[in-house]
Image (cartoon, rainbow, N blue to C red; front, side):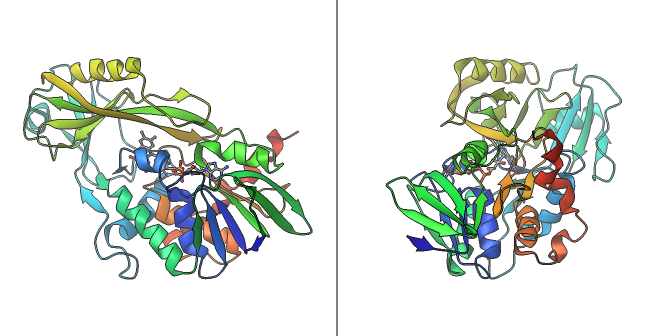
Length: 367
Ligand SMILES: Cc1cc2nc3c(=O)[nH]c(=O)nc-3n(C[C@H](O)[C@H](O)[C@H](O)COP(=O)(O)OP(=O)(O)OC[C@H]3O[C@@H](n4cnc5c(N)ncnc54)[C@H](O)[C@@H]3O)c2cc1C
């Protein structure tokens, strides 16, 4: 039996970033089911930072994270994790607006044609969001795990939480293989498995729903695509962005309810993605170079959940990061850390009310 102050279940971006924020102050261990951290959602994202994404309670976390991602502190990383490419939100009809406060400008059809040669004529309206950037997700995740370890944190791989029980103020966790570890605080950063982790710990679930999203790397008969902006439609039926000189990353913007699993793309979703893409540009499709899928996990109100469970002492939720878990990770980790440690919030998140993201918002839904 090993003793800790905090056990974090899950070594994706959520568990790693929160771990990095608390490890210097609490002896912390991350237990991860897989042989490597980042195998699930974190390793499968589309890797962009887009301020207009996720709604009014997510945008502040995204915005607050920007500076850290762009110019991280020297003791965390020696280079930026961002590469700005901009986003173009296109539509067939006029009138669509981005939320107030997000830097953007409408562009005319002739400018749209210059940026996206071959765009079909019905796409007459476009808004450019210049701040959209690619995130070096692997680099960011590795930097968080590195900081976690430097501050004394330990990562136990191949260590799925099988069960946990609470007695005498401590959680005792049994992991795959039979080892037991204990700590007064148990953090649930289990991604798509967050409700399953709660159930295995005797804690009532919150209704966190994993939804599959498909990604396709498509080779096309058009060159000069590497810096193509992220292009999406305001109805939310596709997005794509430049990848290589003649390839794009494309998604049909699917959200297919599924049980937590090692998600894989379905042929039908790849076909839908390509069909939608062909309705946007006239570029010949050459081949699917690769495809993958991952699970984006949402709470019923589509906001993340950071905070202690109301009924289960010492059980801390760090879940429901949906499709914004990477771009919000610096601010979300600082916010969650202040709640977990019971300390004043870091300057990065001082203006953000953690109450909005607390699991207590679901109290009335519990029997
Ligand atoms: C296709 C796709 C595109 C996306 N694009 C973007 C994007 O452009 N920008 C953005 O910000 N976000 C994006 N996201 C969302 C982002 O990837 C997620 O919000 C984020 O990765 C969630 O991180 P996590 O750590 O909660 O989950 P995960 O990375 O899934 O980590 C959870 C970990 O918990 C472990 N675990 C589960 N159960 C147990 C257990 N019982 N015991 C031990 N370990 C356990 C799992 O093995 C897993 O490693 C995208 C997601 C997908 C799928």
